[in-house]
Amino acid sequence: MRKILVIGAGRSASSLIKYLLDKSEKENLFITIADLSEELAQQKTNNHKNARAIAFDIFNESQRYKEIQDADIVVSMLPAHLHIEVAKDCISFGKHMVTASYISKEMQALNETAKEKGIILMNEIGLDPGIDHMSAMKVLDEVRAKDGNILLFESFCGGLVAPESDNNLWNYKFTWNPRNVVLAGQGGAAKFIQEGTYKYIPYNKLFRRTEFLEVEGYGRFEAYANRDSLKYRSVYGLDDALTVYRGTIRRVGYSRAWDILVQLGMTDDSYTIEDSENMSYREFTNSFLPYHPTDTVEIKLRHVQKIDQDDIIWDKLLELDLFNSDKKVELKNATPAQILEKILSEKWTLESDDKDMIVMYHKFGYELNGDKHQIDSTMVCIGDDQINTAMAKTVGLPVAMATLRILNGEITTPGVQLPISKEVYNPILKELEEYGITFKEIEVPYLGYNPNNVSS
Image (cartoon, rainbow, N blue to C red; front, side, top):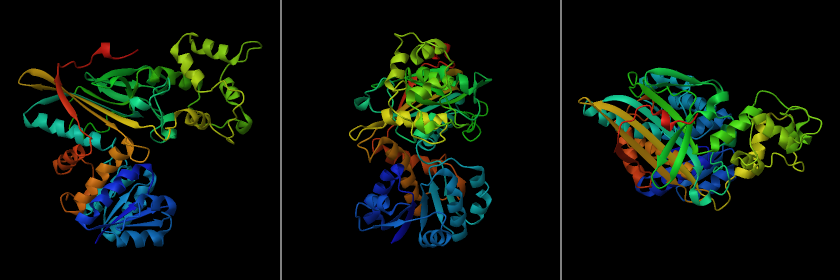
């Protein structure tokens, strides 16, 4: 049998493993699921005869060498910074590797060696990055095939709560790593190009500069800019495009309320708070506010942030228990961001019967025969349950599909790869449709930069 080693059995691996197990009889596959927790790995096997679960320590070199040598292809679902050791081993032992994570500088440095040895190191083939690359390149290549000149490319993606499970004032619940949500946008100004002019948004202004999006059947959303929208400009062949912008999707109103937490300093991860474990949520909130001998914490916060008592933002803050004097932080030497993450996790964690939702939205503006055109492409995916979430499906399925195609010799280009070639994106996008991950493309009037579609 052909052997696939899957390293990492976390939430995003559920749909990936199920896909491979479902295909195992027809494709003659045997899947080893390796995780630090053997119990978790065992759960993901679903007692399938073509699967094996093992406790796996990525830092145990002898075990790592043995398992990678024994596999025909390796899937790494580890945290991003751990992929590199797996990749080096794969090159040493002549094995292909697939991962959903961004290409790091260390990974890119392996490109020439991988090419020389005929090894495929496929990266960024999850959701975002992944499905965004494939769906974007499909339309961009179609426009170029008819000699269209790309003027505008905007791309947005968000992990959200499904409408039927949307029952808080923020219209949001954690569908991915909560820490990444709390730290979103930090580490430098967001940068993009709009109508030929480079634009920069510092972190303290990021959540007040949003763009509105309308998705048929699902209503209105907003998006704030990603940190670096120009990263894929050359990769996508967009060096001459006037507008290139990538953003993160939320429901309308989320960003304005989140900005309050940013301005207070609650998302800061650069220092620790004294005696944090004994601090109440109310004391945590008060620690960011000026002293006043008589004013309450609530009055001080409204005054500092200029929030009216009847503003929906105030109701959103109240909903988070930020003024609760009974609840304790219970985290020692914690940063503000870590404390905020704990507070939010109590309110925004998906319940057992909740469903999540992925929304992706691309805008393509182009010129053809002197006329300007625009294509809007949207995809909405709703999870089935807490195991087969929309996030798990959209991250895991493309990884699994690419793995099988590499194993079958249908994807052959060696080196450190992105899923931006037809040999990768055409068959995978087509197969994703069988799993309900479908893009709806419509022609709309070309708008270019529309100042009426951007909030202040």
